[in-house]
Image (cartoon, rainbow, N blue to C red; front, side):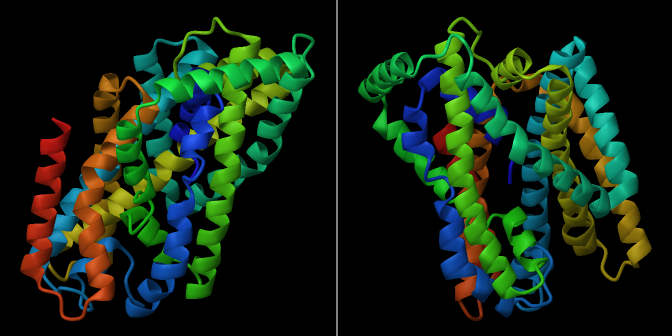
Length: 378
């Protein structure tokens, strides 16, 4: 679940808004608790042979419609493509910061590496990088906070006064209308989102999936607190850093000693790569199973695999080009969620809880969802 928006993005918001940002976004994992107690077990048991959101909505146990499968496949594929664009931007920022390359060159280098090992390594490569990333960050993030706190310029009394004043200022200028819309969007982010559905269906059992959702909720609460605290401490110690997505990287370079900083940089690359390769794998399966299979039925597995690999390359190339238009990782992530969630949530919930759903209703729901999202956004 942890990607650039949840690391570099949250550290940036902590630097910009202070600990008050945790007060309004710290509940971010509640959606996984809701999933665990109301959806996960029912989803897993009702669709025992499903592998994707397309299987749930348009498979034999759902609407059983190639038209709906094609529609949900296109929407899911586009959503994952846009996430890939955000990840490409994050990779470019990181590589540019570390090696001093121009950002466009850094984006190309990052995407070539990720596309290559996703193309050849598949899900095994994804699992390895995820485990590598987590093992490093469990140690490195608390360590960074500790090193900032023991810095010579840090004073407990001054920091408490500093952060209290910041929280009061943030509260006075906070726009609750905007917050309500963002909070609602984020709350529904994990509920029946296609990538989360895929993880539930891939679990060993319904009980395993339920436990993992609960653990994710608790982990997200702690993680947001850690990242926002790093940003807030950074503002106290270094008030003149430019507010952008590189703040976490800058703070790491200030406080980690040489070899530890090198490990931190590698772990940050892991954050981006593990999210990006997951998206590439998910999108490639969606492309072959929900789009190509809806157009051409009864394709052999080796042909589906070929289409999947071609999709990985296509997404990699598109991400390089489109990443040039992303300004803020966290803002791009929120906008993306707001646009796509209304297209997924209703039809997946109704597919899980209703019997004999009509495929025409699913199709109309997707169309209304995306049109209304675009209308309200623009």
